[in-house]
Image 1 (cartoon, protein in one colour):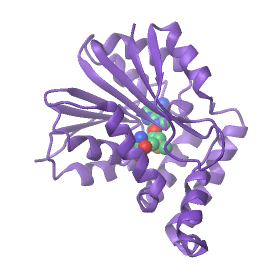
Image 2 (cartoon, protein in one colour):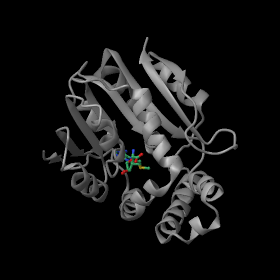
Image 3 (spheres, protein in one colour):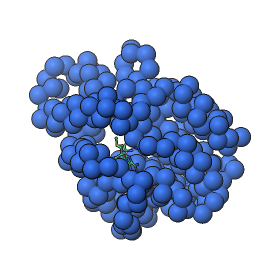
Image 4 (cartoon, protein in one colour):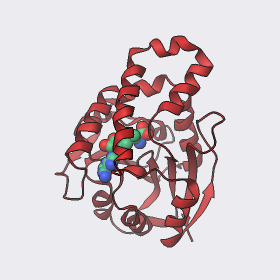
Length: 247
Ligand SMILES: C[S@@+](CC[C@H](N)C(=O)[O-])C[C@H]1O[C@@H](n2cnc3c(N)ncnc32)[C@H](O)[C@@H]1O
């Protein structure tokens, strides 16, 4: 089974040059996260909350290198569509998803513009894992999400109230011991994280907590359901997993 990979030119609302460079750098090291128990737990938890059924139309925005799509494909949805603004991220996703088992379309586009191109009421599951902080207009995201979802559909969101993968890495070090830090790939992830931290501090991105995100979603007709945390150890906040259904 091959991934159908349509590429369209990123529109004006897509990431600026700094963000484009950041995501390109992250693409080179991103899959090192697969070594981390917290990230693997996250993939499983997202699949649990999404509860994808045979025949579902599933869209992941900010699909990156395709790890979430690959995990969701095990549930045999009818179609999978991944939207991401980063060419280097999608190159990796394309390689990974080429072998199926579900036909997967990958589209290079801005999240909001990519959703705007979909027909109303056509999506059963909309998945957004660790990407909403990077959107410049989250209201536009929620508006489009509400439009494309079927009445029985849901938006599954993993989000974090602070930048970087550091909570994931420290949790892993607690579990595995300091030798975990000797992993070259994880050091590279930590370096890219430092850049992401800078983007957050400069106000380019906004990391928000569960009540804030849910209030935004509520303004667009979504009821929120908190589904716990996937990583972050004993630290309050950090990651949260939530499901948003049309009211
Ligand atoms: C931290 S990665 C998450 C990847 C994937 N969801 C996962 O959890 O493995 C965030 C992804 O969102 C994409 N992204 C960020 N802002 C975007 C935007 N406005 N439009 C499209 N993609 C965007 C980036 O290119 C990157 O691949």
